[in-house]
Image 1 (cartoon, rainbow, N blue to C red):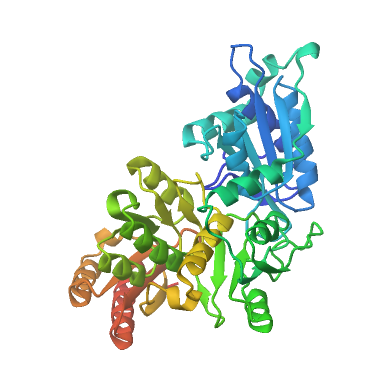
Image 2 (cartoon, rainbow, N blue to C red):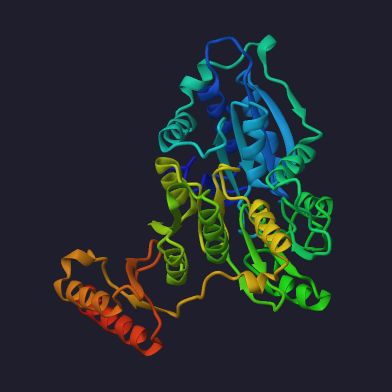
Length: 455
């Protein structure tokens, strides 16, 4: 094993299948460590649920994790290919002690990942992840607690897992809501929702045109799904569908396409449903949680309805953390992860789609007519830097930023941050005046370059 002592990134363990850390050997150790952490001394047999998406490497990893868990005297429930939010839901509703998802979300098929959910259906906290990591790298503690021959765990397939999740999805809508008369195109990304997505829509009465719903192990996310919208847009226009739904490979995010072929993203979903819930008095603390990447148009649309927008750093784990900490019930990302905390503990592309379709069905309006926000123009300036001098230590840059914020005065916003992966400073400015925002971005970029030095 490499000397790199960190397995978990921001969203579980990720990598190329059959290369460390996404190997059978490490998967087995992760299974054993997870079982050890969740096993206790009450004598009650513990159960851990495992689900996956449609990647070829899922078979290999599922078997290895299952073996590791059983070796510690803990039982396994296998639910097969189902969306990540379905695993979170089933872990919770079936009273499992933990859930495992084998997926790399919107990444190409060569990649895979392993992430864990607590019994409440939330991502494990950092402390528990560190503990599991430590047990993988030092196996002595786990080795001492292997199950005796008569106490090894059993594994069984849960045959009706998909049906349970279907019933749950439909229960998220009022009983009076049906999609009769709606023609819906859905792109399943050849991923985990390939079966449950079209079935849910059909059972609710929609006429369904499904594409990318024939996974073969290597075509997940391949020119389809939430990150490649051409296929769903073409389908909506060709089929004269009322709406298009594009899920990603593990079904936790969605991008919609309206009847004119225009994108309706996570910001649009939050603008529409944030205002709707607020009008019904059902929006917790009258606030929506989004990241710093959400368009300023979302902020304006919510402000107009008396709703606050609370921003977090990038990534849905940051959004979920803020929502749990302060009991907010709607939050998400522009990329289509939207969390309805009253219904689900994690972003669920199908729940988001059903909520939007319910608005169309109840109002009799098209998706284009339901648009609740106008996107504010945005410019992004990438500045090559030699070193990441903290922004706070550049007085000239601070002065120009303060001046720019005064000039935008509530009608725009700016964000200056370093890239996490490249030697770049990113300057993003949003506002109504295209020439003004471009000028401001260039001024700030030039000032940063003077300090941090171009390559």
